[in-house]
Image (cartoon, rainbow, N blue to C red):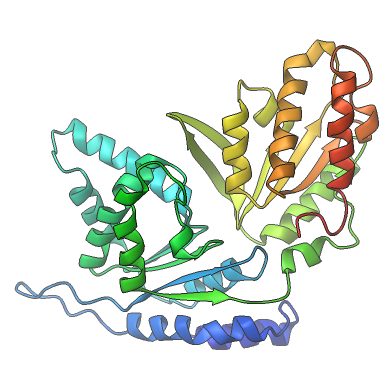
Length: 352
């Protein structure tokens, strides 16, 4: 089993990473957990579940390498049952499993669901822990308490310090014990790197590709591969009892088509949820807009407003330059602001 420190050094030697003192400073925390998990688990008829090592809550700014370090750590866990999953996706699975448990007549659905998770893993690695939904906030404390009691170690990344999770959320006082649980069962570390690697990868590169065609599609595919560096999965965001689907998501970067987000009856709340969940949106195939697709155009304006206010990085392919996307029909005057924002969002320092 190669240590996570050795894997990090190997990536630097290969030239795929550059030395970063802030990243190197948190490697001992990953190494601590790796060493503990490498110990064999002695199970017996009368034995209690082993006390898991303290996990890690790694938080910090966007693009500092949190997800990369966590992926490196999971790769180092040779033979240790572990799962790496985006936090939103995991909570969707939990809600679905609890729904099935209740259909079987189970009163406390959290207990069997947590037990099933604990049977399959010794480590859960969550990317982008954030709580925005009250249904998650209501169950996450008891869920994690059960996972910890069953011997599961949790490692997670987040853009927020634990005390800011579910900040200003409805009935937040019910959620506060979960923050205490994090501090008790996980080491909280901030990754204080001055370098935004995600932003650096985009410096000097175009982020708006027109016209739509083979060249634009190849350029988008190249940017996506560079930013994500691995397999993506669907991300489902719960919004007021509905599901907003991003077809591809990894490490804070989402990919969707214009039709996925603007050709469906989504509203401001849906776009705010997307802007909250992603740091970079790759949006493909924006068509020319006019009275013939007025509803789609209105949704696009709302989406851009949400992304703009949240400082989300936008990479897109479109049928025309921003000023020429909407040139006839009701709404052309209002679209001037959107065109201006699309221009501004192309700047190298956008989102900083």
